[in-house]
Length: 132
Image (cartoon, helix red, strand yellow):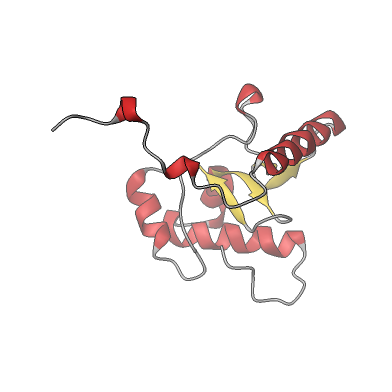
Protein backbone atom coordinates (compact mmCIF):
# COMPACT_ATOMS: atom_id res chain seq x y z
CA UNK A 1 0.00 0.00 0.00
CA UNK A 2 0.95 3.59 -0.36
CA UNK A 3 1.89 5.17 2.94
CA UNK A 4 -1.13 7.01 4.37
CA UNK A 5 -1.27 10.65 3.26
CA UNK A 6 -0.55 11.96 6.74
CA UNK A 7 3.06 13.06 7.28
CA UNK A 8 4.71 10.79 9.90
CA UNK A 9 1.58 8.65 10.25
CA UNK A 10 1.38 6.72 13.51
CA UNK A 11 0.97 2.94 13.45
CA UNK A 12 -2.67 3.40 14.48
CA UNK A 13 -3.29 5.78 11.57
CA UNK A 14 -1.77 3.23 9.20
CA UNK A 15 -3.92 0.44 10.63
CA UNK A 16 -7.01 2.64 10.30
CA UNK A 17 -6.06 3.20 6.65
CA UNK A 18 -5.77 -0.57 6.08
CA UNK A 19 -9.15 -1.20 7.69
CA UNK A 20 -10.82 1.58 5.72
CA UNK A 21 -9.27 0.32 2.48
CA UNK A 22 -10.53 -3.24 2.95
CA UNK A 23 -13.91 -1.95 4.19
CA UNK A 24 -14.49 -0.40 0.75
CA UNK A 25 -14.61 -3.94 -0.64
CA UNK A 26 -16.12 -6.01 2.19
CA UNK A 27 -18.80 -3.51 3.20
CA UNK A 28 -17.91 -2.40 6.72
CA UNK A 29 -14.99 -1.64 9.00
CA UNK A 30 -16.16 -4.35 11.42
CA UNK A 31 -15.99 -6.98 8.66
CA UNK A 32 -12.60 -5.65 7.53
CA UNK A 33 -11.25 -5.96 11.09
CA UNK A 34 -12.42 -9.59 11.21
CA UNK A 35 -10.71 -10.41 7.90
CA UNK A 36 -7.34 -8.73 8.56
CA UNK A 37 -4.94 -11.04 10.40
CA UNK A 38 -1.65 -9.13 10.24
CA UNK A 39 -0.49 -5.57 9.74
CA UNK A 40 2.87 -4.02 8.99
CA UNK A 41 3.74 -0.45 9.84
CA UNK A 42 7.55 -0.54 9.97
CA UNK A 43 9.42 -2.15 7.08
CA UNK A 44 6.62 -1.95 4.58
CA UNK A 45 3.07 -0.69 4.58
CA UNK A 46 0.50 -3.40 4.12
CA UNK A 47 -1.73 -6.00 5.67
CA UNK A 48 -2.71 -9.63 5.31
CA UNK A 49 -6.35 -10.55 5.06
CA UNK A 50 -8.49 -13.59 4.42
CA UNK A 51 -10.38 -12.94 1.20
CA UNK A 52 -11.30 -14.88 -1.92
CA UNK A 53 -9.81 -14.33 -5.37
CA UNK A 54 -12.71 -12.20 -6.61
CA UNK A 55 -12.36 -9.88 -3.62
CA UNK A 56 -8.58 -9.68 -4.09
CA UNK A 57 -9.14 -8.61 -7.71
CA UNK A 58 -11.44 -5.82 -6.51
CA UNK A 59 -8.90 -4.79 -3.87
CA UNK A 60 -6.24 -4.29 -6.55
CA UNK A 61 -8.35 -1.52 -8.07
CA UNK A 62 -8.63 0.56 -4.90
CA UNK A 63 -6.57 3.80 -4.85
CA UNK A 64 -3.53 3.40 -2.60
CA UNK A 65 -3.26 -0.37 -3.15
CA UNK A 66 0.00 -0.96 -4.99
CA UNK A 67 -0.41 -4.71 -5.44
CA UNK A 68 -2.07 -7.79 -3.96
CA UNK A 69 0.06 -10.88 -3.32
CA UNK A 70 -0.76 -14.39 -2.10
CA UNK A 71 0.43 -15.33 1.37
CA UNK A 72 4.05 -16.17 1.94
CA UNK A 73 5.63 -17.07 5.25
CA UNK A 74 8.73 -15.29 6.54
CA UNK A 75 9.17 -18.26 8.86
CA UNK A 76 7.52 -21.36 7.30
CA UNK A 77 8.59 -23.57 10.20
CA UNK A 78 6.44 -21.56 12.62
CA UNK A 79 3.91 -20.44 9.97
CA UNK A 80 4.73 -16.81 10.70
CA UNK A 81 4.12 -13.99 8.25
CA UNK A 82 6.48 -11.60 9.97
CA UNK A 83 4.08 -8.71 10.49
CA UNK A 84 2.16 -7.96 13.66
CA UNK A 85 -0.79 -10.19 14.52
CA UNK A 86 -4.12 -8.43 14.18
CA UNK A 87 -7.12 -10.02 15.89
CA UNK A 88 -10.59 -8.42 15.88
CA UNK A 89 -9.24 -4.95 15.27
CA UNK A 90 -6.38 -5.09 17.76
CA UNK A 91 -2.64 -5.68 17.42
CA UNK A 92 -1.73 -8.67 19.56
CA UNK A 93 1.69 -8.45 21.25
CA UNK A 94 4.06 -11.29 20.52
CA UNK A 95 6.73 -12.71 22.80
CA UNK A 96 10.30 -11.33 22.60
CA UNK A 97 11.58 -14.72 21.34
CA UNK A 98 9.50 -14.28 18.21
CA UNK A 99 11.08 -10.89 17.53
CA UNK A 100 14.57 -12.36 17.95
CA UNK A 101 13.72 -15.22 15.57
CA UNK A 102 12.37 -12.80 12.93
CA UNK A 103 15.52 -10.70 13.18
CA UNK A 104 17.69 -13.81 12.73
CA UNK A 105 15.71 -14.98 9.72
CA UNK A 106 15.64 -11.64 7.94
CA UNK A 107 19.30 -10.85 8.72
CA UNK A 108 20.46 -14.19 7.33
CA UNK A 109 18.41 -13.74 4.19
CA UNK A 110 19.97 -10.41 3.34
CA UNK A 111 23.49 -11.67 4.03
CA UNK A 112 22.91 -14.73 1.81
CA UNK A 113 22.40 -12.57 -1.26
CA UNK A 114 25.31 -12.39 -3.71
CA UNK A 115 27.48 -9.34 -3.25
CA UNK A 116 27.80 -8.85 -7.01
CA UNK A 117 25.14 -9.06 -9.66
CA UNK A 118 25.07 -12.83 -10.04
CA UNK A 119 23.44 -13.96 -13.28
CA UNK A 120 23.80 -17.69 -12.61
CA UNK A 121 20.16 -17.94 -11.58
CA UNK A 122 19.23 -17.06 -15.16
CA UNK A 123 21.31 -19.84 -16.70
CA UNK A 124 19.26 -22.89 -17.63
CA UNK A 125 20.66 -26.17 -16.50
CA UNK A 126 21.28 -28.70 -19.22
CA UNK A 127 19.24 -31.41 -17.46
CA UNK A 128 16.18 -29.13 -17.41
CA UNK A 129 16.24 -28.37 -21.13
CA UNK A 130 13.93 -30.32 -23.42
CA UNK A 131 14.91 -31.69 -26.79
CA UNK A 132 12.79 -30.40 -29.64
